[in-house]
Image 1 (cartoon, rainbow, N blue to C red):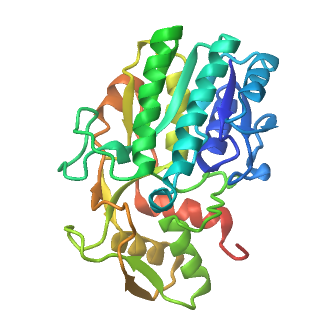
Image 2 (cartoon, rainbow, N blue to C red):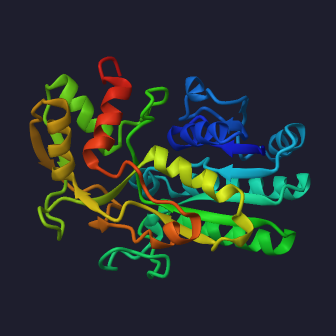
Length: 323
């Protein structure tokens, strides 16, 4: 059993990571400022309410809980928001990571798994993207993720850390047990927004851009179930020292916005009116993973890769009645 500090442990992915760690016999400690995470999502261990920009609080939590590894998921994650507020993203994501790494050095914690992102890859790259694909972050959010990989590599070299960056493609779905769901506080994520539209009717769902160079003109994303993402973190924990430094987590299949809308209609049995709106700043046309390395190095592959399974778990977890 390991004591694991999960920064952002009250957030969507973080809460599922905590549950997966606990199920595997580890002791997760969530560290979250609750600005976008939910206290009620922390069900698998204690919660430390603080901010990753508070190095003293981090160091204290690492020492007090006798932490052996950190899973660093705290940070801001909305691409178009980062375009409007770049400095805020660099402070929270990059400076916050620097504080986590400094606290680890202070407390002599030697292992860290990073939440990184497929947005670091070049928008012009074609086909499924492996870890050697060209890098060209198209937003401040994406650049912040590439920067935290760099500062972690430097800290690891200086302090003897073992580290791994997991480049998520698009986290989706919800805990199949129904214990955890996605709060989506800012109401910016595709599947929760489609489920709200299905549950309530009313105003048409806004498709933000239908002129992308894709099969139906809408963005295509590789959706990976959040419980599968969480399982990958657990798989990484015991052998982090021997793993490659960067691993993609995705299903290897992309779904367009319109295809996702059709899946929501199938699962919920409800029709959804739509209207086309302008593109959002920072969005790219296609993101699909080549996750071969995750299979060969981690022994991981998604178990709930069907879009209908992903949508059904999200729908069942909330029912979307009172959000």
